[in-house]
Length: 431
Ligand SMILES: Nc1ncnc2c1ncn2[C@@H]1O[C@H](COP(=O)(O)OP(=O)(O)O)[C@@H](O)[C@H]1O
Ligand SMILES: [Mg+2]
Image 1 (cartoon, rainbow, N blue to C red):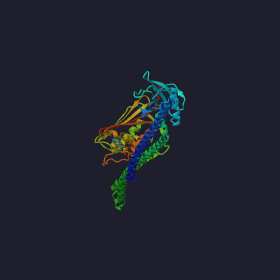
Image 2 (tube, protein in one colour):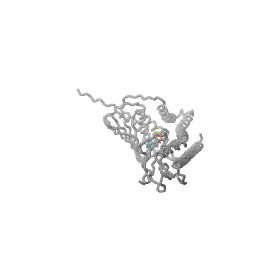
Image 3 (cartoon, rainbow, N blue to C red):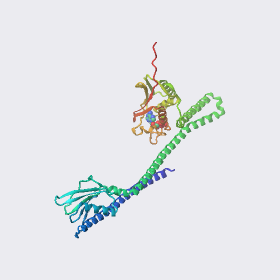
Image 4 (cartoon, rainbow, N blue to C red):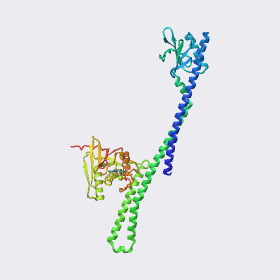
């Protein structure tokens, strides 16, 4: 897929998701307030009826306008205009609420004019059974009425919520859809990053292969010239060029194959007991011979008493090579590499490889272990690589259950530390 269309999809998707969420929030709020208004209206009219019916019962004809006053979302005061009894009130309340299908818990208090206090009446649940315990003692009096009662609906919010069940289910479904969509976009973005990295890798690889191939080609052309037979010195020099370039090619292929091998399902380690000091010494020696640079030095400080490890020889060796190879590749001027081992407790070895190279800034330190990852250097790519070395190293450490960590200061130094278990050395018996 084209990069532009991916960006387009991601932006459009984000806008759509955002729009859907905003719309849903808006709809939910609207539904809530509509429901609330409807419930309020029903309650108002029911309470109005109760007041009228009590008056009829009391044979009082006087009725005024503002009978029901909602003081808080859950609390109402209702004017009655004449003395009334709690039993009568309760009868009309339950009666009227069931007529209007108001299935709500309620509790009421009646204003006692002689003591000027609200007297708690009863708590009645939605199914009509009485409950004695007062839920709320907060029935504020209302100075403008003389004979009135206060009524509280403690479960009103959840009642409205219940009315919105369908809406809630739809919202949940929508959230699931949005989550899936988000996850899909995440996958697309990750895939995009991966394909960019793969593209870089292929560019890199073609580039790396092209140089030796064309060098070999030129050398072969020279060798095909019959006159070369008379010049054995030139012949041997061209043959050695071919040999050298071939080795280089082989090394590159080997690097890619290393990865292919460890990524194969069920790849297993050929573990054996190894002297880690010996492996380090050999690798350091070979690297020195290969690089042949005079201004670089490798210091070995192998102090660990437990130097036997149970590991795969090829992979362990490759791992050390990879780390040394990086130290050499990402050097500044004069290179010093310190390789050290030290005992950690009675059964662990700490192996560290430290260089005084260009370092890795904090933000890239976690990423360098990722597949194909190379620290961006702008457009200058003077050091070639596939970004596979540390990925390989990390995988080998994981397979062996070793712990690897990286410390570095940009422009100054880099230090890789690996902690691995040692095979305990049996103390030799003195007879
Ligand atoms: N010793 C080091 N000093 C500085 N930078 C390093 C060092 N080792 C690795 N890096 C950075 O980490 C990146 C990943 O390393 P690696 O996986 O070996 O890939 P490659 O060497 O092929 O680029 C390198 O591109 C480099 O930027
Ligand atoms: Mg490398």
